[in-house]
Image (cartoon, rainbow, N blue to C red; front, side):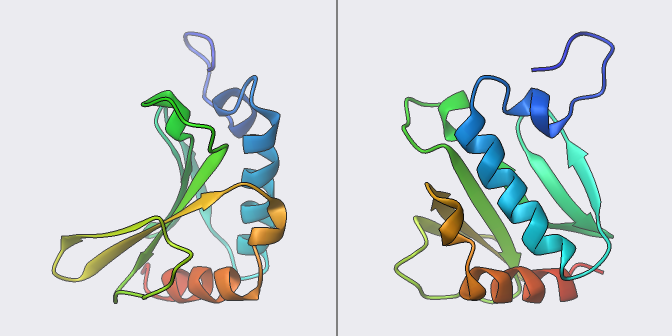
Length: 124
């Protein structure tokens, strides 16, 4: 993590976890093809924002023992049924949070890019 007084960065967030950083970079590259966004790095996650958050990358090993390098959480206005999601939660009546465990950058494929584009479009 970053030192006291320093703004956290993706590199500090994934410090010591190069696989997680590579996965984050793949997600960022996919989002960059969709449009402009803000990036907010906190101690618990990296948020992609456009007015509000539409996608988040985080490391489950921060909280529990896990071999998963990174999780991509995508905020959609509907539930998507896909075997690819580890879990789907509905934190409010208009938001469905879809959690995708990431192991390889090749997982950021056309289907995931479509979900990210839909999330981006609804994040106004």
